[in-house]
Image 1 (cartoon, rainbow, N blue to C red):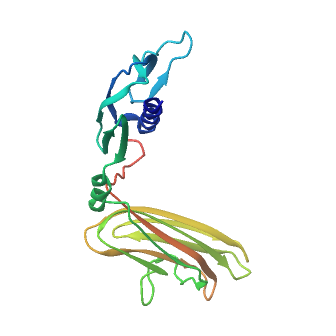
Image 2 (image 1 turned 90 degrees about the horizontal axis):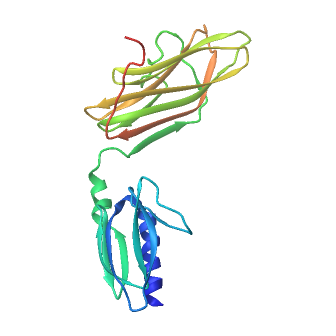
Image 3 (image 1 turned 90 degrees about the vertical axis):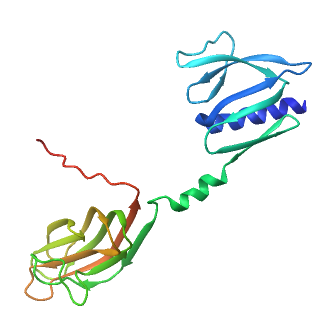
Length: 237
């Protein structure tokens, strides 16, 4: 009974681990019986019921119920041990430790609830004092996908033109919108860029009001470091 329970545990673990399975060997016990199963190419197991057959992408095998697991060959990332017929599977600690040197996976984010007055001059949204634009998020050298979101609100009884720009080095994204009287608009921007040295991303906005016209609020900037970047032209030849 102990051996049967141990085997069931192994089968369940191997079902969860999927493609990490390579091979399992068993030794039949005195009262062992065989059960037909189908092994998929990704390592998953399926028990045959009734007159069922394995599919074209599966291989039929016979498993011994009540037998003892004698050997197990594991794929990359797993370690295993056997004691009294019970196999213990664990994730190799080296897999987690090696991720400390992996490129990417870090997130740098910042926010400013505002409100702040939008600078004048719709043609130069990334100019400001003392910092460029309305906000600046510093990031270390690396490859990034950067996203920004904010609201702009018109405080006047006249329609205003607003432009906002997200800049990362020489790469940028910008949006321009007409905001109706006493109304608000949500803006979203995205850019990808690789920084060779520590630097930062800038969000700037400006409007065409002669005086105080629009306000920005609820600004959020998120820079996600990645291991690789691809940015291709999607238009025709």
